[in-house]
Length: 142
Image 1 (tube, rainbow, N blue to C red):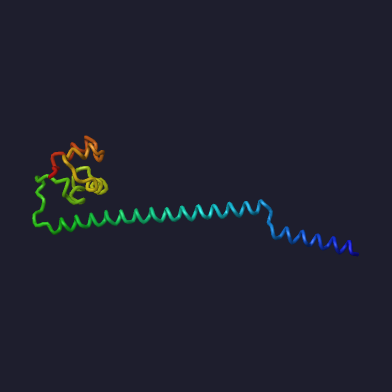
Image 2 (cartoon, helix red, strand yellow):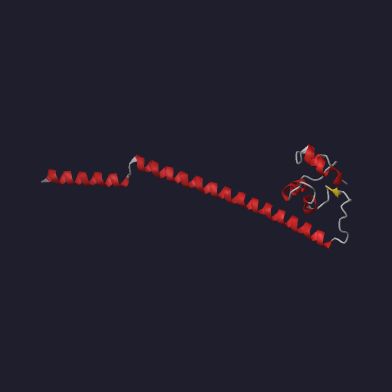
């Protein structure tokens, strides 16, 4: 009977030990899951920061457009069409009024100020020679 009791005690002891120490493959899975979770957490933080930057840029662009609209509405001297647009001081909306210039391109032009010459739009890569040719007579720099 004591041999049988000893066998039961040993078996029970081994069972307890096995339950306390999961197999290496389970530990490996836990480590992989923890690492994947940490990576996802870091990537979500980076995505959130990028979204905040994009939202800030969009807000600035909208504010620039709104300021240009307000400037146009408040202007006591409406444009005659013969006065060249100053690339260094014109609003984004005014720049977007030039032939072939979108609001996005106008914002890029404004962001790269100041310009020494109007042809700097080409040398900085903002416009092609053809695009510049379409607006060259309508722009100036001061």
